[in-house]
Length: 511
Image (tube, rainbow, N blue to C red; front, side):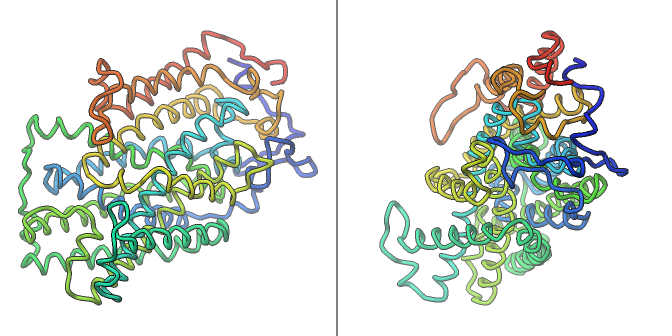
């Protein structure tokens, strides 16, 4: 155990500043070799400049997006009323904030991204396992969000151009103009990410308030269509507050947690630019649960209003905006959707997998190349199928994602906070043969904990509408609690294996 959490770090390799942040010591060589490149190296303390406002704005921009809207509106579509939907999302975001802050701590302290942070627990090579899993999930998310943005362009252009655009010939079930809109939005996002992290920070700062205003405009419009705000609150739950609600609540809660389980892992990709721990802690605490709950409140009221006006809930805001005959209102709503989708998709689903893919082959894959790989894979995942149904979107896609990534979060938290007590050696994170090399670059304890936790978390999950069945039916009772099962199992198992097996491989290099 003492070898896993060494009592001190050699002062020649790194220096700890008065505020607790750590960087490579002045005059010491920067990490180099096959496991390092410019994008993966620690951010110097002088360049860690993000403030509380920057982190809050980042979360406002990411929370106020179309996919977040469909989380809450999707709960209305499957039978909850507005109170039940808002309650479910509020609880989920308070829960997921905890691992978000715990894993985010390594960012401002060491200036390292998620895949490098994962090397401490999984090994210098083994970190590719959680990094690639996280990256593939991001590819799915990037594809879904890009499809949403393409929808907005399609409807926007349809109003401006007319039926020749809207009623174009169909290819693969959609108008060819829809496919063109999808491609245009894809290109726009890749162009922004190629300009770097500073461009993303500036974009998030102005996108956040713009999107929030747009959501209130949607609420005002739906209230006017429904004849006041009363009908927005009056739509009853089809579940009540008895067993029917609680049976739906737990898988819904895990799905809502799964929505941000990706960021609970790779939040160091952003907090590595933080000016202090206080900046990232307050920025996230103020930005995530409050804005997600507010946005959920707005979206469920609008969706409830659509049920009153149109006879059934319209859970997709793009489809809902397209129902208005007011061209100016439609243009504003769809532009808001575009900005919101750009905001979250670039920050949450391009930045992190770009680092993850770069970690696989640092000498060959740069940050920009990793972003391009993400964008290409996002198309190959067929996101239009993932997004086509609220049942599949919430319970299959989000449930699987949450269960699998919760398993990784449990290992990261156990290793960094309990085993190492937040002490890392920066140089060894980039070096073969150091204290994070384990056996051939892999920590078998982390891999075993990941496999066992993952099987228990998602083995009994329903795969509808993709597949009618469960991989391991005997594990079905655990599937409603996938994120919690994955996180708890992997955390306990990783700690037990570390304690039981004593000194790890590579202990000779750890001192």
